Image (cartoon, rainbow, N blue to C red; front, side, top):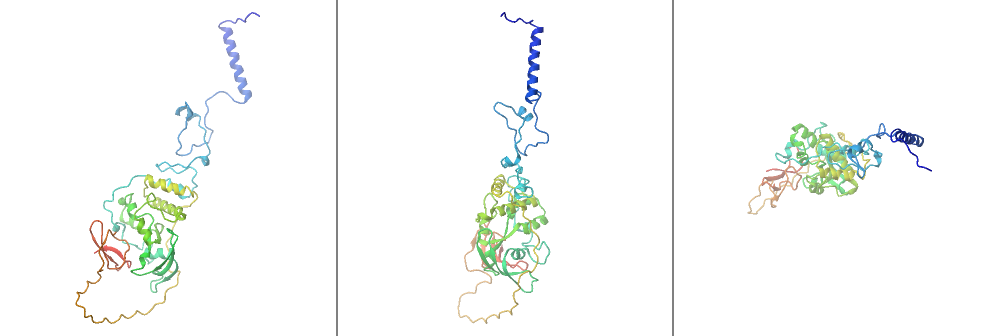
Length: 364
């Protein structure tokens, strides 16, 4: 059969037109629809913080017009240091709140001192009792209260220490009170270098005495924590770390205290193991609620015997032990009367005051 000859212009156009029509019809029959630019389904949302992925040989521009959005629950938690919360973090949880914290480096310690945060254990809730005794009444069990203090002062009790899991017996006294200390969950020095240096004294006083930021804990462990943040110190009891991280996040969010990138990563790692942990809250602590110790008559002092020793009398309130080096102003101490020296060389004395009966390192 001789080859079919078509007119090079009209016939060719008709043939190509016929093929195009056939292609469109085939596409319609197959349900593909007209060949147009694909866009994301109406109402679909790209998860916060996700980047546009491109296929092999693709470009960001082409991917932006044809992006497949995976369900939020299937995406991995965001670990960016810009503060973005993971899309799947349940609302009202500490993990979600972590994403709102500002991430930045530490500022200088210049000007920091304990008294920048007001007098220790100020009665900020105005219930007639200092914050230390408020926290002891809240966190200890089997408490005995001192008579004549309107249900304020704790004489003894038992603490189930959240940081170690140990049970600690507490007895009020110069040589025993330090066994149980009140920890600032977010340390004052840590807050200072991450925003508090710019606060007014009223805000710093509220921060230092907020029940949300205070926990009764094992004294030596609290001393070991120092001013560490979550990137440098965590409670030895691993079972408490989720609650500890959640409380740190709650306090920092309430007072707009920043976190470092390493600190945020540590908090995200902990809360990622317990993403449903709620944001903790704290309310003022009521007075009383425990038995009051019976008032007893003061024990008469024994009559001093006459000494025949020729040694010189010791100065009143001075310890015979060597001066303790590297003490921290305001930290609990014992015995009362001991002398210490800060790293800067300032002489300190372990003493109490009329407004604070706890023995602390104070300027001598």
